[in-house]
Length: 469
Ligand code: BES
Ligand code: MN
Ligand code: ZN
Image 1 (cartoon, rainbow, N blue to C red):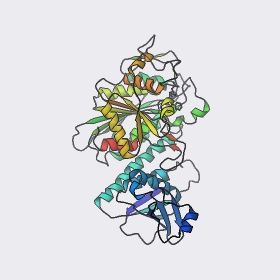
Image 2: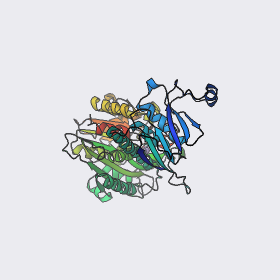
Image 3: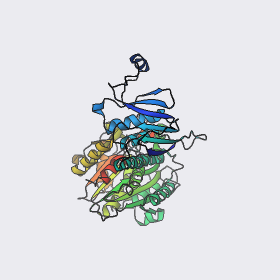
Image 4: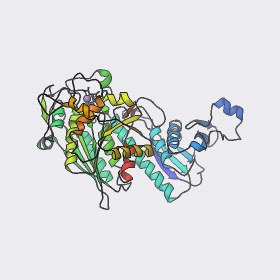
């Protein structure tokens, strides 16, 4: 579905349906109480009631007036989008002057991954926002479309089958998206990756018949920037578990193991248009984790970019191996902060569920800035610790570190975080977002639709465009 959005101070006469916001407790007096009671419509956020006519009137519940804000607006619009996709020309009366969450919500809730249906239902919509045409309203509409569109881009990448979105193909898309959005983009092939001594990325990719890539993205604002932040995203385009082949139920979701990389790419694609004031670098290590070709054996020792050696104890703990190299690379360039996103551990999902992303790191202020940006953008984060006394569980008898502690079932999200910390230069504030639980949704409600969520895009855009931490 694609749409053309307009701002119309007066509702055009040629619309098929008009959406009228209604506050809970203030239902329109012209509708009979008996009719309303029978319809079940109470004005709760996102409820809709279609009233026949020309145009059709769609009442949109916005909840109690006093509780209305960006989060309600986003949810209401996301629920609305599911029921009005069939109207070619839609007018939406804005409940208040804040158009951005309305636009975002509509895009998020109306999204479906339909690229592989032979007869994809496709309605090109014209959506008129009935609101005053002010510079602020225009900017809110444009920003909503940008940010919402970036979330959908991340979702599309996550939902793409593993066979279709291999590391080389991901890199091709990164080049295309970069040239469309004014980013610099450099792609390292296997030879360059080897030359750069990215032992973690090379090690993981050895099991795969398709070669790895490393994508380096650069955004620079028009004015010289006072600050520079590096983003690192886990890009395992398919995680079969390597020699430790996963069972089928887990294999079913492993095309999504590049969600971190997708979020970084999608986030950075908005920065130019939104005049982000700070410089941003993106580092995306891309590989499959497969049991073909010459897969890493348990017991093999990898020499990482940082120079440290890692004994591989578990071929399925591959994310931390490729992130270690990307974190080291990012660290070498001396940014003011590093933030990584990764579908890293099941433990993070077990701890915080499907709606809250785990944050770990070395800098209270940075973690808090991420959480605060999340609150403004409508995404939830919660801190997990990196306990110093667990660090001993990473020691190896044959190398500097192990990638996995045999026999330890507990606290594995924290151990993964502690492992990554080893590769971040001391002194550079670093935050690690484990998005394993939140990168995919299995429910269909509000802004959440089944499949990739694009989690992190809204928060990172908010954090970066507002100037960092
Ligand atoms: N991509 C997975 C995360 C994952 C695990 C997603 C389980 C869905 C279900 C990651 O690479 C991984 O395999 N993590 C494992 C590591 C462990 C098996 C060594 C984890 O922490 O669960
Ligand atoms: Mn794995
Ligand atoms: Zn993985």
